[in-house]
Image (cartoon, rainbow, N blue to C red; front, side, top):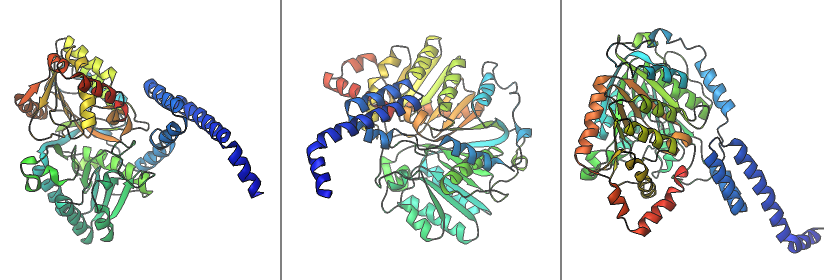
Length: 486
C-alpha cells in the first residue's frame, strides 16, 4: 500500500503541487479580499498571491492575517472595565476661553472617535531624552507603594535596562505588585532577553503576541508599540521612549539618540492603567483590579489642570483612530502645524490633508531625521516628499543625533504626542498609545523644541530631489511600493 502511494506521488506530484497551489491561492485571495479594509492592501495581497502562488500564500499566512480576534479583545476590555467607578464627573464638557473657537470642535471629534473622554485635573511635564526619562522612571519605581505596571516595545538587557529591571525586582521584594508587558518582537532586540532576569526574581512578565518563529522580525505586524509606566494607579510616564542605553549620554556619549517622554499626574493616569490592564489580560489572562491598581480618579484630580485624553489605536476595533485624529486636527488648523516624526510615511489621505492645509494658508512644518536608523524607511520617505513639497508643505531634515520623538502641535493650543509615527505601520498595524492635550503651555514648549530642530536643519527642496542620481530615485520608488509594510 505504501509503495503504491509512493508510486502515485512520484508520478503525479506536479499535478498535486499545482492543485495545492490553486487551492491555497484561491483561499488566500478570498480571505484577503473579504477581510482587508484598505482596498490597496487587498489588491496588493491578492496580486502577491496570484503571481507567487505558494510563496505568496505562505507569506500571507505569517504577515497578512490579523490574529487578534476583535471579539476576544472587546470582551476582555469590557470585563476589565466592569466595576471601576466612573470618571464622568471629571470629563471636560466645554473648553474655556483659553482656546480659540476653531480648536474647540476637536474635543467633540475626540469623543466621537475614542472610547476615552477628555479629562480635566491633570498635570503634564516634558521629559527630554533618556537623561531625564530613565531617572524619572527609577524615581517613581523606588517610591511605589502598591503597584507598578510597565509596558514597552523594547526593553534591552543593557546598562540602563538592568538598572530599571533591578529597581522593579527591588519593588517586588518589598511587597509591591509588579507587572511587566513587553512586545514579543521587541523583547528579542537584545541577548539574553531582560525577561530572564525579571522572571528569575519572581517578577511577572508577559510577552505580547509571540511570533510563530523565534527570531526578531523588524517588520512584523500587530506589535504592541505602546510605552507606559503607571505607579500606584496615579503616577504615570508615557511617550515614545523604549528602554535602551543608546538614549542615555552616560552610555552612548556624543552618539546618544534623542526622544521625548512625558510625566503625567492626575485622573488620566486611570485611563493609562486601564489600557495596561486590557493588554495584560489579553496577553496573560490575569485580570488586574482593585485600589492597588486603580486609585479613585476623583482623588487624583488636581483641580482644573490640563485637559488630556488617552488615545488607543491598533489593528482591532480601534483601527483608523489615529488617522482620524490627525485629519481632524489638520482640518481645523488656521495658523501653524508642526510635526516631528522619525518615520514619516503618511498615507495618501493624510498627504492630501497636509497639502490642503498648506494651500489654505496654514504654515505646515515637518521635521524628519537627516540620517535615519531605518534605511529602507528613509528611502521610502524620500520617494514621496515631492508630493508634499509641491503642495507647499515645509519639510526639514534635522542633523545631529537621531531623534525618535513623535510630536505634533496645532496653532500653539493642541498637542498630539505619544508612541505613534506618521506611517502605515503606526496607523494600521501596531497597537499605539497617544495623548491628546489641550494646553497652550505644553504646545509652546513642544513648538520650541521643534523650532530648535528646524533652526539646525536643512530644508528639503524639489530641486534637491530632482538632482538625485536616477538609480537612487528608482531605488527609492521601488522601496516606496512596499511602504505599507515598512
